[in-house]
Length: 353
Image 1 (cartoon, rainbow, N blue to C red):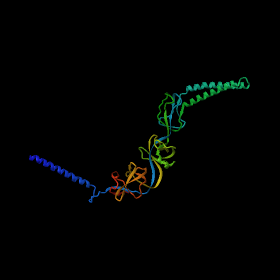
Image 2 (tube, rainbow, N blue to C red; image 1 turned 180 degrees about the vertical axis):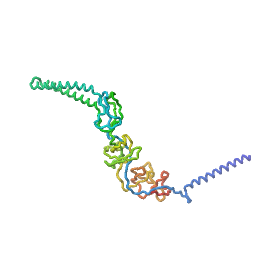
Image 3 (tube, rainbow, N blue to C red; image 1 turned 90 degrees about the vertical axis):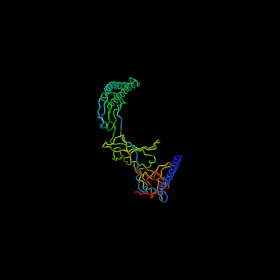
Image 4 (cartoon, helix red, strand yellow; image 1 turned 120 degrees about the horizontal axis):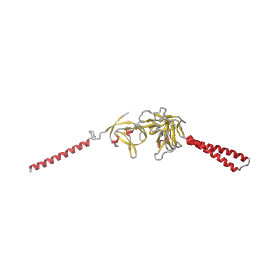
């Protein structure tokens, strides 16, 4: 019995010691973050002093590079390929013969029609003389003249078809890989090759509709391509007259020289579009701005405490965000630890330049 009572006593003492330990720990935890006076300790954070400055309002956008001119080379007539007169991947000049389709049958048809045309021409001449002598009626002469005109039209049609058997480059540029060989039978649906003019390139991109009034036509843009840090320039030359309803964006097109051929159509472009220059603007680091349901907010230091204010923003750059309203010059903007801040949280700010 004594052993039983001893065990009970030990259990009660142990449980009491555990309760006492937890009370002491909780009290210690509650005092964490407080100074000797029992007040919460100020959070040590970094910040900047908002200042008025001149803000170059540049808009970063995504665009695509396109050939200045691009056409798919096809044959307008069917037949056997007689010759191919271009080198795959090479440069061709405007008017250069690219390939020739056999026209033997068409030329035979033309010879036949030319014979009929000569006969119809002679019949029309004789009928005209007989009409002048009133040997035939006007109706008979009209039939002879119509027959002559019909054979002329047939001759012109066959000549046009013969001309189509010689396919020429519509402009100077670089031609791609061919899909035909000499002796193959070609039809109009068959794609022979693609011809592009890459001496000049188009950069197409879209801007949000809210920036439409700030867009400067004929302005110069900067752009970079993947895999290179080199900045290229292009000049805006065309703007779509309507806003795309689905995306609420306006399409813009610029053109750039590509004499060295280093830029290729179809590649991705990072575009920097210059808008208007804003004087007396306030910009803050992007990490200081917190998106919320009703807009955006930042924290400033006011009398040693964090103060939440709602702001309206505009253009975003790589490192900063333009503030339109809500922030005054001279306010100390908190830039670190903002996600854990609340209104009236004691703070001690180290101002960074």
